Length: 204
Image 1 (cartoon, rainbow, N blue to C red):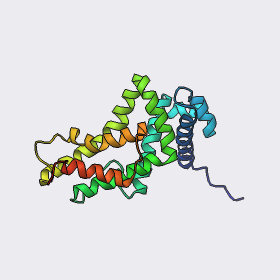
Image 2 (cartoon, rainbow, N blue to C red; image 1 turned 90 degrees about the vertical axis):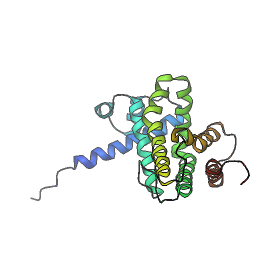
Image 3 (cartoon, one colour; image 1 turned 60 degrees about the vertical axis):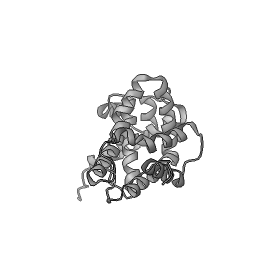
């Protein structure tokens, strides 16, 4: 009698985790954050809700981790290391590359619908908004801070520039245009933001 190999618990857990990520993101995009429930996520993912509560304490925690995973996949697809910005020595090229990858992410239907739902909810749900800024947005912005500080060390950016304010010159306009649909977002648009931010508007 041939013994069958024991089920791979690690592989099974990873399959369930990924199904939960996909279910959470798709559900919040379809019905909004308030109507998304742990029970609904579990049903969509084909798991018991106790499985979700074993790994996360709330639906907000599930969605946060799902977004982090989606961002990591997007970075890898763009050829970047997750949780870092490229440093080729050319600040403009590095910023343009990252912002182009951000455009791809913002236009990805898997990302756009849940992102808009959560952004809208974050405006009226102060706790959720604060949690997502603290846990998701601010760590990403700090990557720009580190890259701009490295540019200061090489003389590519003035020493008196505050990196946390400077990054808003190209990150914030992109976010506003996307959120409020005041215009199309594209590579040309983000490339121009970088040029304006780094070189200013005054005649050269």
